[in-house]
Length: 231
Image (cartoon, rainbow, N blue to C red; front, side):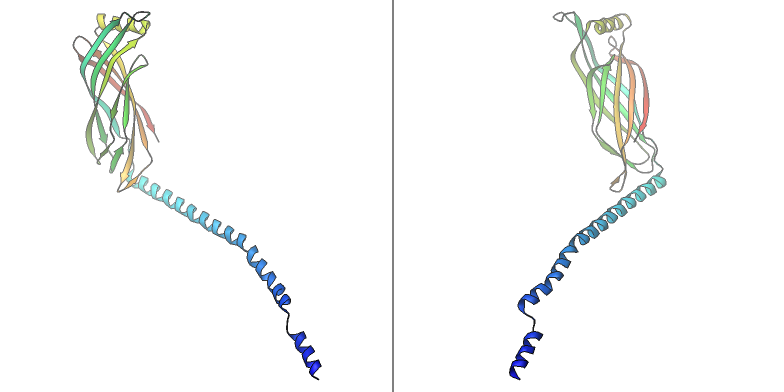
């Protein structure tokens, strides 16, 4: 009787090896679910970023429709000639001339919008027949809504040598017609600012033709144009 009871107890009690292997499938099941969990997290993050991008786009569209932004005006208002000098360069071969000048450029910025504009740094290049002579820099600034602001820069050219063909034209124009034709070109970038939010950049290209009088040391002609509005 006792031996029979002990045999039944051994059959009813699982061995340690049986217990270990019976839990093994549960372990592999947990490991196999990890990739699915990672994929689910990635999908959630993708949906979250997509929702944020759509929300940002919606805010921008609402601002654009509410503000109705207009193109700002950035015009060369005045050119003050401080010095214009033309001197021969006998050491050059072939012979040429060197041009020196100093001009103060006064620009007028007009903001017709209901909100302020944030201008970045603007650079303007003075050229003679496509040859860069000097560059002026206007620091960035903030312009309130419905306002007019004057900004200026000084361009200094120190004895820039010109080749023979350009030099002869410059000497002829200066001596016979008392004129030096120059081109002022540059790009002006601005952003609409609402509270602390800046819109995408708006760029206006400035292209001005100016004529200086070496004898009178003054400006005799100015005509400016704008190449257009670029986003």
